Amino acid sequence: MSFCDFEHLLPRVQKPGRYTGGEPGSIMKDPAQVLLRYAFCFPDSYEVGMSHLGMKILYGLANARADCWCERVFAPWTDMESLLRQEGLPLWALESGDPIKTFDVIGFTLQYEMSYTNVLNMLDLAGLPVRSANRQSLAPLVIAGGPCACNPEPLAPFIDLFVLGEGEEASSELLDLLAAHKRLGSGKADFLRAAAQLEGIYVPAFYDVSYKENGALASITPLHGAPARVRKRVVQNLDQSYFPENFVVPLLEVVHDRTVAELFRGCIRGCRFCQAGFLNRPVREKAPATVNNQCRALCDRTGYEEISLCSLSTSDYTQLPALLDGLLEWTVEQKINVSVPSLRVDRFPKEMMERLALVRRSGLTFAPEAGTQRLRDVINKNITEENVLSTAQQAFEGGWTSVKLYFMLGLPTETEEDIAGIAALAQAVVDTFYRSPGKPKGKGVQVSVSVASFVPKPFTPFQWEAMDGRDDILRKQQLLRAGVRSKKISVRTHDCATSLLEGVLARGDRRLAEVIEAAWRAGARFDGWDEQFDPALWQSCFEGLGLVPAWYLRRRDPSEILPWDHLDYGVTKAFLLRERERAYAGQTTPHCREHCGGCGIGCPAAGA
Image (cartoon, rainbow, N blue to C red; front, side, top):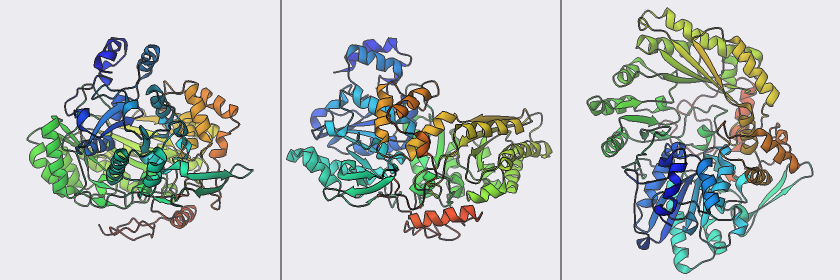
């Protein structure tokens, strides 16, 4: 198969640039000169996948090997899928145009639970059985990783192995092992038994799962010498870890079309709702010189005119002033913007604002998460209304006129007073603008309030909590909108049905695989897209299989075995339970640099 085989389809789809390849920075190799072919699959559209930093890192890392050619694959949109099925053409890789079913590895990154049906759809479009048990040969080996791999059970029957935690070192070891077994002519079972001994590699077929009569898990039993608990992988030194010197530059507009620089991994804060903050511990920083050099190399090679500094809490990077000084030495002259997302309102000094004002004057984004101090203490946000308003005033006097505020509805212990507090805090920000003597003259303010529904995620102190049902979510959203009185405030809420299914899949067990497959066979695709998601279809599949979504959203007893209890992300269950108790007592926990909370990660960086 070659580009000529599907070129005639391009005039018949909405965005042909999604499928052509040939972008600057894409890596071409001679397939006859490599041992391993690797299809790196992002189970969403090209525009979303091409914005993802993790894909850029692992694509470059695999291609740095002389024995491997890694190519990109994205979920074809429904118009292209229809044409592929009509003409019997298989899913192909962008670089070569070769069918991915001929590759040695097909790897999926799982960034969002709502992409699960796309994983099955891509396997089927490739011409492969969707279930691991029906793929007998070693190649192609179907693997998956990413944040959703922390609870891989809903996808367990479809994936040969999961990579838990950070992928750079684990992926390299896995490719080394696969190369050795390919030379030996090993079968799939022999390879999987060897792979299961690598740290961070989870082979779901090697674990027997049983259930009680009430539907709760009874046991998770390892087989074939697999470890009882699989520990995630952690890259210890980011300065020495691989980072690409070039990015593939898309030929059409994508979601985040810019250079991305990673500052550090992990988070010191311990917000009790935040899965990313617990999954990515411990905190490890890059040196400012490393970040600066990587930014300059990427801008030189790609031509991008914006740099986004990436982390979970950018203002907690201990050397941010020094980094910004180094970046501004060349970005101002070259008219390159420096974007600093993920800022905290309690760590946004005037000096930082002045530096940013040299290169950007777009909106600022902050995340109070809750509308009252009581609820902010419950979730351990550790910021005050005074922090929010003083930082807003400082921003307005520095020339900013647009602020976005992120909140959640449905947090544990939430009351109607907490919901009213969201509208009140947004109004207080508006009032602060008009009271600020140094605000920009002749301009108004715009405060955007974005409100998500709280989803209790694995490996957080709230993993045992219940999630609000549909009626409660809709009632609270309406209550919030009714509390907003100013036209200067806009409110955006997440789709209720999408959030509920996300919650079910995030906390689900292996029985949900039947629902995912049934939904996919019934036509579910791109469920994270409002125009594609069909809640009635999913509800029908649950009912047809005798499973009740609300059962997965219920409050869990701490004594109950959770579907992810055999996976070890470093943070102990005892610590999570202590944090849960402190939440209900309204007690905050200091961040890691103030006091080590004993989470179990073995972090040397409490004073990093």
